Amino acid sequence: MNGITQNQDTYLLKNVLLETGFIYENAEVVATKTALFDIQIEGKKIKSVESAQSTTDVKGFDIKGKLALPPFRDMHIHLDKTLFGLPWKAVFPKNRTVKDMIAKEQMIIPELLKTSAERAEKLISLLQGYGTNFARTHFNIDPTSGTASLEHLLQALEYLKDSFSAELVAFPQHGLFYTKSAELMEEVAKWEQVDFIGGLDPFSIDGSIEKPVDLTIQLALDNNKGIDIHLHEGGQSGVKTIHYLIDKTFENPALQGRTFIRHAFALGYMAKRELEYTAERLAAAKVGICSSVPFRNMLMPLPELEKAGVEVFIGNDNVQDHWSTFGSGNMLQKANLVAQLYGYETEFELSRSLRYATNGSIPLDDHGKIVWPKVGDDASLIFVDASCSAEAVSRISTVNGFVYQGNSSSIIA
Image 1: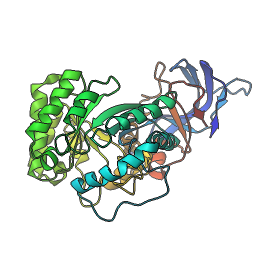
Image 2 (image 1 turned 90 degrees about the vertical axis):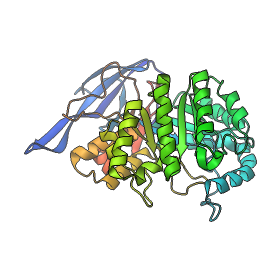
Image 3 (image 1 turned 120 degrees about the horizontal axis):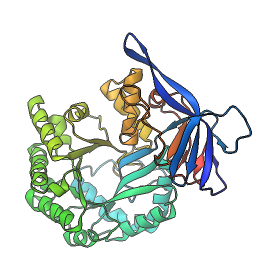
Image 4 (image 1 turned 180 degrees about the horizontal axis):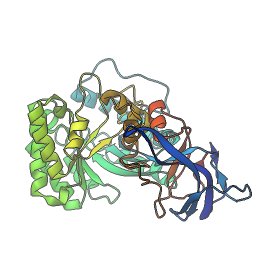
């Protein structure tokens, strides 16, 4: 990848490959049409999208026929706790319950905090190399970390603010009351940089569904934040927590569209009728579900949730940390995994699967109409070595570069 060396407010991206429609046979999509375009950037916006000029003397940056796609968005990651940047280390062979992992974290966090800002920067750079320019990231709030994890993460984000942005979730990884994190959460909830109030397995960690969830909701309402709760519990406590949170969201309309449950493994164990009922309630309350697409012993019902109108997000979660060995940081790989798990293998299905990497944005709508990029859109694009988005998902194509919010000092192909 080559970097633009001049900081220009207005410039041209030449010979950019864009999708223009579908090719049909017997009313079925069999291929994707593309063409070369020149895209003019002005400030942080796309000023024009026109057919590529045949002359070679037009000034600009030659993308050389690489396919432009919307940038990727990782909707679940922990930038503050990565081991990335340290020597390779697989997960610990023991201490695998959440409470055991809390105890392990209490031991290793003091040492990790010494270099957490630098390692967060390295992890963000890894994500960028895979085409991600945005993340919703959690940061630990617990007696061991204090506010240091947040402070170090803010340092890393400030350093990379010209090419990366994030939403921040205050995450009581060690439990609100299990390790007396409630007062710390009350403190950081007031920070303007914090976007969401997080939570963790209220029943199994804090011994109650109502007490920790009620505090989380109150902090969100008092400080105009969203809610973003980790829920690993797969039994009745998980089911009850989902419905309790839905009930509270109905009671507090300000939280609708701003409340999210991640993992939500209980959904994967539900019978069909119970799942349908729960999905309908999630959709009505505008409570979103974020999944790291687990596949060990269950298949999360993402298609059923989406059919019911539930907003579904995807993220890497762990990238080389003490919780998981397998996170790569590659959102295109996540989209590929979704396609494999749910049998999305046709040209049309693969092209739709791109939305799992981009958090919804795709070049063509279901009818083959161009919906991205358009004049006035945010000037953020990535460039991949693929002929179309379906191929990019299927082959997990290489990302050759990107432009972030029109910033001409960002990397491009």
